[in-house]
Image (tube, rainbow, N blue to C red; front, side, top):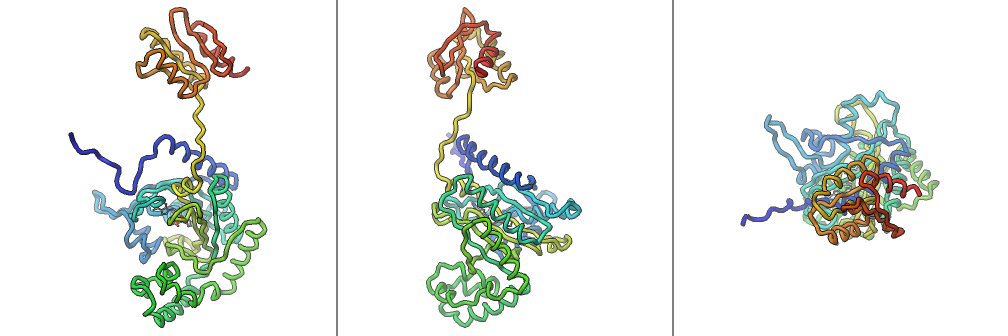
Length: 415
Ligand code: HAM
């Protein structure tokens, strides 16, 4: 016997039960985001590697160690998308969306790929639902986008949600602050973890993220970017907060909030759920006012977020999945009734009924059991005298001509 093949590590099959729960996420996203004027977009599963190197940032973990990069037959370097913002920004530029009324509000639900250590809630292929609103720096766009994610998580029953919020200011403010922080970290170098020390030059902000006790202690006295914001950025952040306060949203300002992508400027936020384990981030995002320009487009502001579908479902807990409706099950005692049954089921579906036919050669008893298992409301048994149709709700039973079964069920449904 040959060895059994399995799905690659960090990937999984979406089985029908799970697919039903995911469909619920998609329907809620459609309803909530659609009502706010967001329209669906889907970009390709792979892009030119350069898009992520330039968009996400070459010093990020994502670009340095997590991308699935390969060369195609034509020698081009391509990468399975690790995230959705850079591709949507690329599409915005490519399709000249700056000519549309701004902001252009888009949403997506797609699969993404990151070579990470796989564990519960962290996969190598995962799904995100996300939004991008491109073309306006109005603080109301930030606030609207945050409120929409809060609403979506709430509608999906995600438990114990917390929102953290901060502002990163502009790249210029950040550059000055970065030097200040580097000087501070160097002055405390001997107390830092090896990893943080090795990244003082490349990514000093990540020090706020460290679990290492010594590093944490040093970071308590570290200068904060939030205290160094330029006037405009501080005003922008205050306006976002005032709108969120007005909307009654609870949040915590966390000046140490760091995101793993380089394109952010001004507002950043993260939703976590205490119902999750180590991977508590359900969704996050922020403003990326320099990204479009960095990718070769006109200077254009943007803000958005993405939330992991697997984590949403984990944090929503086991919720009863509604069984699909089955109106009619057609059973038959004798094989020569199969063609008639096939016809009835076909006709029933064309009339808009959910109908199924016996397909496994079960005994009549087995067929009735199957009808019960799938919760069919009507069961038609084809026999010598015609079709005996039973309404499992009322228990009523009637024998009709095979050609009249569909009519009988339709009439029963409207009663
Ligand atoms: P991100 O924080 O990298 O942001 O990912 C957003 C969410 O995707 C996370 O909060 C988490 O729920 C989920 N996620 C990320 N990696 C994995 C994984 N390996 N397995 C399972 N779930 C995962 C972004 O991707 C940005 N593009 C968000 C954004 C949109 N910012 C502005 N616009």
